[in-house]
Image 1: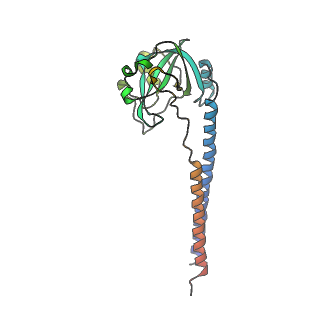
Image 2: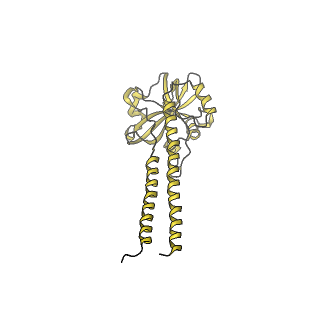
Image 3: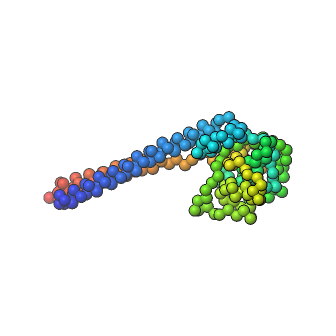
Length: 242
């Protein structure tokens, strides 16, 4: 093989190895970033529940206030509940029941009370869980969502929601803008609800974290490329056998 061709092959191999190693390093950086997020979520969920006033202050000061625990007292307006399509933690399709809670201080918080299967979406099938008395709810702050291109559009007229659009959901609950809910959802923790539904504690606290495997894959490909290049060069430099 000519020297010029070997030089071109060497340059191409160096570029390929550099690219693969760079991708591996990038995945290690992503791993560190993801582990930081997971640690922050765990630290927040383990805090003592704060008051609604404190939560509002957190929301104003933090760009991402999710997962801080909050405790509120008030009464649910069950006649205004909305249904957000979701899978349970076990993978069962159904709905999250989002109900406005009027606090003892007169504020309105949209509480994601938890999961119900399709067959139990109608509140008539779970009247025991429609508690009328003033009670305490503890949950985690969850920010409104921006729908992605693969998420269906919400259907307020059919009370079928596929993303947590707080503004639209609040307007559907309180037409005319008579009530402005607190600017976050409260995802209720699991508690003893009469009848067992809705089932709280549906917050997904585990995040996909495959960055280490991805990094090892890129580094292994870089090693394979080097081995293939070395074997080829060894054969080329030895020349044809007699």
